Length: 186
Image (cartoon, rainbow, N blue to C red; front, side, top):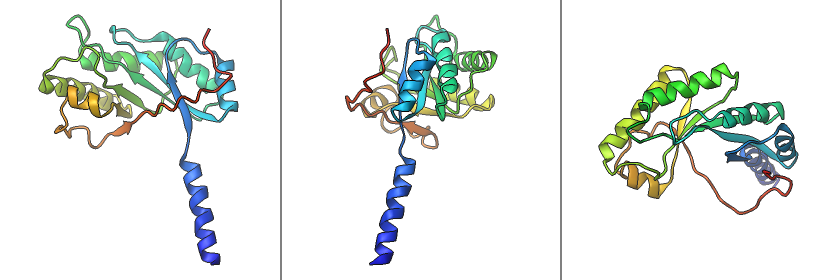
């Protein structure tokens, strides 16, 4: 009985220590807003650092710095790739992002490739090659990276048979409609 109680308590403590609450966002967020989020239990933030229009997101980079200033424990960024013919190559988008972060002294633990059904062509092979090129560049720059997607987006963009990213971390968003009451963007 005592052993069972100890195991149960240890399991509860261990699982609670792995849980974290955080959010991703676009638009300017002040340090005081991040401090509010932290006071309500949020410990991580993921800011957009590259936009689907082919430009670095300077507001997102400022948010990353503000999140650090507020003391959030984990801060990452995400790249929303630009896919039009006028956009830089996948590798160039990755290198511009990493350079902008370094130039701003904005540190991220991980960069996430946001693979959602916005402007992706229907050619799975080309889409796979684009994602692989971006990832290869991030790896060559020493940047940790993972993939943000979901079942439907992955199926439409690269196909469910594609396993080329199986070694990468996956960010799976949960939308639970429980906003923190003090967080507002004006």
